[in-house]
Each structure stands twice: as C-alpha cells, then as structure tokens.
Length: 356
Image 1 (cartoon, rainbow, N blue to C red):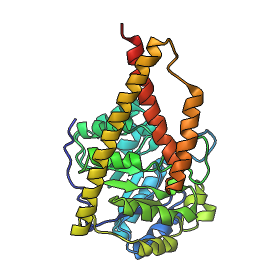
Image 2 (cartoon, rainbow, N blue to C red):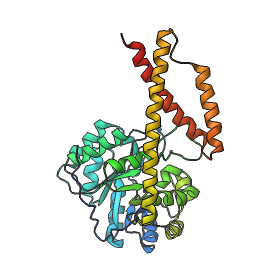
Image 3 (cartoon, rainbow, N blue to C red):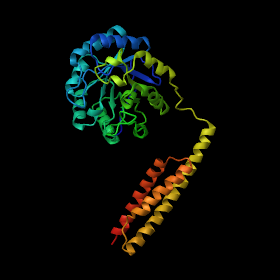
Image 4 (cartoon, one colour):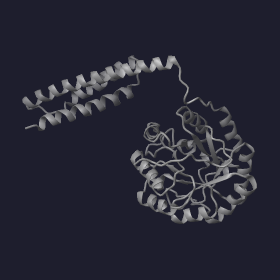
C-alpha cells in the first residue's frame, strides 16, 4: 500500500532537524504541567508533550490523570503559545483530545501492536486533520508497525510520523528497550517520505543514556526527538528514572552534532564503488559455496547420511569466529553470518533429499 503523505506543517515550528517534542511522561498536576512547559518554552522548545492517559504494563500503577488534565494542556497552549501533544489509546481518548484542541496525537507501543485497536482509532480519526505519530509495537515486528501506519493513513490522515522507542526484551541489561536500529532503518528504506522520531527516554530507561541515544539517532538521520522532561524528575509519578530536567535537555540538545544528510564527496563516492565491488564478490562466493553445499547434499542422499552434522557445524563456528577475530571482526558478527549461511545450506540440502 502506497502512503499518501504530507509534511507535518506544524504552525510556528521551523522545519529543520531535529524537530523536538518534550515534556513529562505523565501530566500529574496543573502546576507540574505548567512549570515544566514554561521551562521548556524558555529553552526554545515549541512542542509540549504529556501523557493524559497511561496504558501500563501491570495494574496498580499510575494510569494517568485522565480528562481533567486536558484543560492544563489548553492553558499551556494559550498562555505559552506551544503546540501540545498527548497519547491516545482508544476512541474515547481520540474524541476527548480532538475536542480539547490537542495539536498532535501519538499512539503508543502497546496500542500499535493491536490491529483491532488501531482500526478503532483510525475510524475515530476519519475527517480530522491532525498530525499522528505512531510508535513501534513493543515486539520487533516491522510489518505490524507498517500496518498501524497504513491504517491511520487509510483513514485520511496524511500528516503522519513514526516514533522509534525500542523493543521489549526479557533480558534487560543496558537498555530498557533494545534499539534494534536496523528496524527503523528498514522502515526508512521502505517509506522514505515518512518522518521518524527517536524516543531515547524509552529506549534507554535511564537519564544518562538520553544524550548518547539522541546523538545516535541524529547520526542515523532521524528527523526528530521526543524526550521525556520533567521539572522535578525524581518526584515523577511514572518513569522517574528516564526523565530529565529542561535544563539538562537544553544541554543535551546543544551538544548534538547534526550532520548534513545529503552531502557527498568524490572520495566517498569512490569508497562506495569499492563497497559495491566487494559486495558483488561476496555474492559470487556465496553462490559458489551454495553450489558445493548442494553437491554435499547429493552425496549425503546417495550414502544415506543425515543432513545435519553437528560436530562439523560446531567446528566451523568455532574456527571461523576465531579467524574473524584475528581480522578485527566481532566473533558474534561472524557467528551470525555463518548461522544464516548454514540455515540456507540445510534448506538447499533438504530440497535435494526430498526430490524423487
């Protein structure tokens, strides 16, 4: 499905990288909302975000202040001249947010993972003219993310952007949600006109990771950042550990190095030609390797041998990863490549085994 997209065209917001959306995880009190917004506005931030409704992983946590927080957002809009954004997760949220004049809506990771919920929201948005930002689903499923985007676009919403907030994992070490940068990179390849924001707060889950994640996003040509910022993060009612003060946010943004995404040079072009040539050689070698694998498959069939030879496979993984390390290649990287090659070799040999 080809998307019908328009630029976000946000009033009073300059169209340059990075577009910044900032504000607390949750709207807690009118004072907290306005104080945070005022501090952000003084730092030049034009778009204020705050969660009115908070879909939580487990019951019992703070699930948002609800509709009583919408007038607080209206005050920010009226008195500070900022655009305001909030998350919606169902039809009722959409209707309440639109009636309150919320300028930008975003759809969270738990909602984008549910096609039924996405369709209900899309139906509720028909006839509206509001930018909608769609976070990736909690699980690393690019097709599900694209499906969510297509549903919103199919409802007539043309000002759309994606938000990369990382992917949930059972084993949480450095990150709260794994970046898996290759997924938004593939989204950009398939939807080149779709703006993509990075949510470093949810990826990192820790204040100290916000700055490096912002820089990584800029180095990968993301269009904007949506960052959680609170006037008093330590006292936040939700996700306190990943929120930063407006002063810290200003410091982080001032340190960002924004590189020209379009600039190229003759030297770079020449290096890319070398890469192209090496890629062709790699493909020729892979094709040659697969031909030999097929010959091995024929031999195994003729001699009634099983396809999988575990000792041989283990030996290849061990020896080749050591060789790769001596060539300054990550052993894990080498093992992943070899696993993919081995899978394809097994698949080819299974075809031969099943031939009559």
